[in-house]
Amino acid sequence: MAARFHRVHGANVRLEAWGTRATRVQSFAHGLCFSREPLAPGEIFLVEIEEKELGWCGHLRVGLTAHDPQRLPAVPEYSLPDLVGLGDSWVFAITRNHNRVAPEGEEAGALARGPGFLCEPYLLIEHIRIPRDKLVGRSRPGRYSHLLDELYRTNVLPPTARRSRIGVLHVPRPDGTADMHIVINGEDMGASARGLPTARPLYAVVDVFASTKSVRVIQVDYGFPSLQTLCRQVIQKHVIHRLAIDGLDLPLVLKNFCKYE
Image (cartoon, one colour):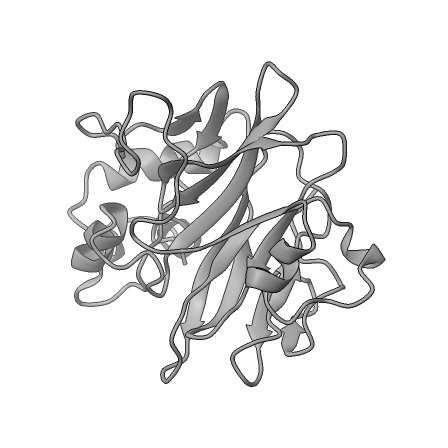
């Protein structure tokens, strides 16, 4: 089932017809959105930041809630502290060093990165395997797109920059609870919250707050990569950056697909 935003949302949110793009049309608050369906264990709800708005302090907030959006008496003005204050909700503002629960013996904020960790085709979180090609933000094709792509890929740009992709999921634990993980441009930030109850469905929370103006849901396909995706990976290995794809003797549709257009 395709990921969509829920029809219940903040008063200042406008959803486009297919429910995959949420825009805050005024003010800086009342931008709360939810996933249309509860998330299955290990299922990521991924959004891309499409528009920013100058003049406000604060950025996108994401998380999970056990509250069914349809049963809320009213959509809270803010995810923090209003929704979290209702209980059974776990939401964090997206920053470079956001809150993370460190396992025993490990410093908070320390992330295990192996060499070339972004080159692996799948992101592994415990026993969960997520295709990485949809997780990393991409610039729009242009003169300096190859430079911007590298900045997104390595998270040199702020995690709330335009085109960044942020996802949230919950990973089951042997004791019957779950950990909440936030993923920024293909990098797992670690467990942001532990001991989430799994007896009730968990919905994704996306707060289009302050300087974040508009976000779009990115569909993530699990299982084996499609033939198109495999072709794209082979082509991309032989070009310097996306602009070089224009010079290849390929159909226009395939060129656009390879450039993520």
